[in-house]
Image 1 (cartoon, helix red, strand yellow):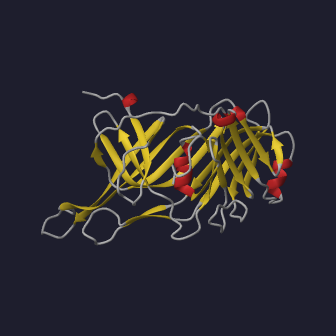
Image 2: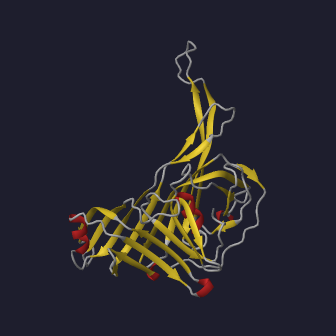
Image 3: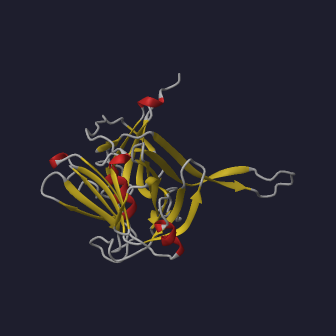
Length: 321
């Protein structure tokens, strides 16, 4: 009998020990969930006097990948932001708390790991050891702020279904955002994207288990796109002169204890392309950019970071990390 996709839900919790699964402590309202189990098959191709190539497939290492996404809820986005960047500083004695995420540059420089709990009506599977490899944010003037997330995890295992509960916070409409380029407020941005990426590599050893001994997070890169109404040459000039302006996306709503915010601050971005388009009744400029590492966008671990991501909500310190 078929099972309804709409009954699916996704839970998350931080781990104390990498790979040791924990029950979900928060639930993410997502539009898309894509678990991918990754079992390596090792072919037996030993000659046996016959005109064939593969005689058997031996089970090799096993791990998983997980993708999900949806509209940005300012209190649940903190899980992915912390998971991909690693350095988190929380301030505030009461709601709203302010969480500032940047690249972690001390110790092993490894961000925290999480357990995802994927309920799909038939069963619930836990994906322990989740290390985030990508967080993408995108928006346009007539839609909601949206995100996508990618992660590498250990192979899943079944568990009992948790009881989900969801935030009362609402998603943020993109029109509520404020965009600043080079310290100047820009009111001509039609749509934008910002993607934070870092490779996560499964490390396999001969240790008696199929699971990786570690899921290792590499260096962070940040890039994105902008589409602007072209009213002047200012952004084209930024490209042609390699000006490297600062770039801010700031989305906020609510007041008092209910105030929420998602802010991306990049002190220095390099435009890698700028293209004039006449495909509509008005002229547009499409820009690709890369955020550059600097010593201003860092957290408490210091070093360099290409971005500082600030999230304001009612979630207390110690929740995301």
